[in-house]
Length: 365
Image (cartoon, rainbow, N blue to C red):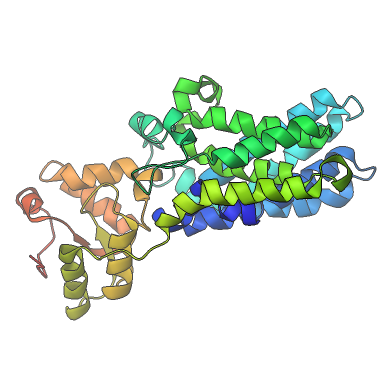
C-alpha cells in the first residue's frame, strides 16, 4: 500500500487530476487479483465466484474506464497463469473471466443509461486524438521532470519488481511482473502496437494502464517470501523506491492559487438568486479547480463532474460550445437531458447563442 501510494502516477491521479473515482477504483484491484487467483487454483472455486463478481460491480460503479482497463489486465494475467501452469483447467479460466460479465450485469442499472448510447445515439466514446494525447513516451521513465504533473512510470519501483521477479522463482510473482510490463507497453498507446489490437481501444486512455502496472509491481514485491530474498535488501529497495520515485513527485502535494477570473465567476454564481443545475460550457474539458469553484464556492450543482469530455457525451459538449445558431434545438434538447436550468459560457460565444431560447441572467466579466 505504501509503495502504491508513493508512486508518481498515483500521486498524479490523486493530487494533480483530483480524480477520486479512479482512486476508489484502485482499492478493489488487489482483491480482484487475489480472488481471481483463488478461482484458478483452489479446489472449490465456487466459494470465490460471488465475492469476485461483487468486487467487479463495485469497481465498475467507481470508474467504468478504469474497470475496463483492469478487466484487460486481469484477462492477460489469467492467460499467463493458464499457459505457464498446466494444472489450471480451461473451465477455471472461463469461470474467472465470467465474473467480469456478472459484475457488469450487477452494475448495469447505473452503466446502461450513459454507456448504452440511449441518450445520444451515434456519439462515439472518445475522439481519436485523445488516445495519442493520453499515451506515454520514453520520457515517462525519467525520475525528475520540470513539470510537476508530468506522467512518470515509477522507474525504481519497476526495477525493484524486475530484480525480485528474476531472483524469486514463483509462478504467480512472474505472472504479476509480466502482466505489469505488458500494462506499460499498453500505456504507450498506438506506438506500443499492443494497444491497437484491443477491441475496446476507442473507449480507453492508454496512460491509465499505469494504475494497474503500479499495483502489480507493488504486489510482486510484497509477495516475496522471506526465505527467497533477504529482508534487509528488500527494505533497502523499498526505501530506494520512496527516495527516487516519491520525493520528486511529492511536489504535486500542494495547495494552488485560485485563478482570479474563475473565483469572480464562482462568487457571482453564489450572489445571484439562481436555482437549479448549471452546465459549464466554458471549455471542452473544464478542470477540477473550475468545477470545485462552481460547486462549492458558487454553491451550485453542475452537470459535468470535471472530465465530461472523456464520457460518451464529449462530442455533444464540443458541439454545444460551438453550436451557436446552427443547432438551437440540439442545445435545448441536450441540456434538458441533464436537467440543466442554465449554462455558463464566454462572451465571445454570446453572438451565436443569441437566437436560442435562453436569456442572460448574470455576468461576471
